[in-house]
Amino acid sequence: MAIPALPVRAKSSPTENCILPHSSNRRPRTHLSCLQLSILQSCYETCAHPNAMECEAIGTELNLLLKVVQIWFQNTRAKEKRWRLQQEKLSPLSGGKLDMSSGSYLQYNALKANRPILPKPVQLTVTEPPASPVAGQPVPKETLTGRCDACSFSFESRAAARAHVFSPLHLATLRTTNFGQPTMLGNKNGTGNGGAHSAAATGAGG
Image (cartoon, rainbow, N blue to C red; front, top):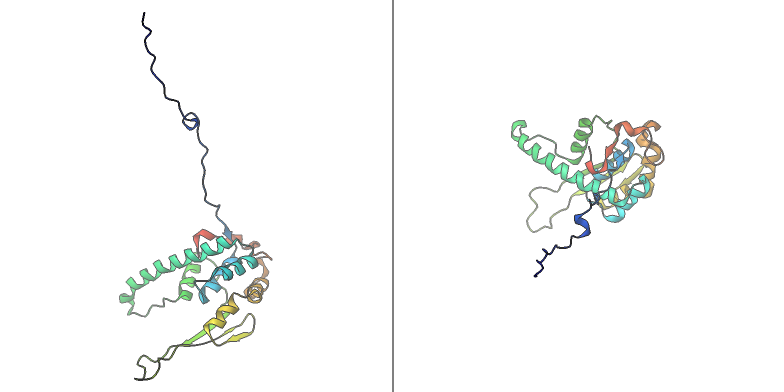
């Protein structure tokens, strides 16, 4: 008597009979204190594209991971770009007199988030070259002069301004003096009572 063949049952993989735990490579959002955010914005206004060493200097002083600082600058640049596009659409309605500088964007962002606008420690004055250079003469470059009121330091080039803004001395001065504001804005690591105005690092300036 023939024995009927039993249907062959495919072996199931272990993953088919159990529920895989949810895995995610995303880091938890880092919340920045008001002081940390203010120092980041101050650096951004002078240089929106810092290199890895400059980002590391900020992270060391503010007790932030290098990646957190880099992501903050990246997101802030993206947000400013979107803001500029919005401003360009409004420009014809305002007679083309809108201020679209990084400083104007950061001030707008602080007001939108209901954060205090702190004094601007680094003042830069840029003199643009003449629009119509003399024929046969080399094209003149822009001239820049500036001063850091927090450190009582002057500079006469964009490179010197950038070197100072990302220097440990300047960053430590901003942190320890709280931009000249009351100490309630932050403690040594910039994580004091500024929690009311804290912002996620992945949320850039806001």
